[in-house]
Amino acid sequence: MDLTGGCACAAIRYQISVAGGEVADYCHCRQCQLSSGAPVLAWVQVQPERFRLTCGVAKAYQSSADATRWFCETCGSQLYMTDSAGKSVGVTLATLDLPYIMPPTVHGWYSERIDWFTLADDLPRYSQSPPYDE
Ligand SMILES: [Zn+2]
Ligand SMILES: [Zn+2]
Image (cartoon, rainbow, N blue to C red; front, side):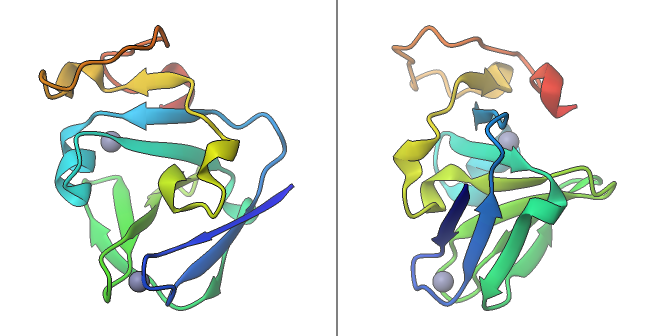
């Protein structure tokens, strides 16, 4: 299934093709908070060959030794993240055109959660990276 998404100003558009086994998660890590200005970011990981930009060029910010975050330099939307090993591309779920298609099923980096952000779900909580994301 092909899914499309893009930034707030529509200068950058992307497409991912999902096979069905992808896991969507919430990430509470400090870098996700700082790079989004929000208490938590939701992601889905896809294999690099399943992600492509269809319009525009994203700007890169290397947020850690291993991770580069890509965003629109006009509107600031954070769209995706790549790793130095080229293992996967993380796509910000909320930038999908149909974000409700892939509800997150896991919380990652729960140890860095802002404590006023209380959760009402009973999804698994991992204090650091979920096992499939290491
Ligand atoms: Zn934009
Ligand atoms: Zn994070």
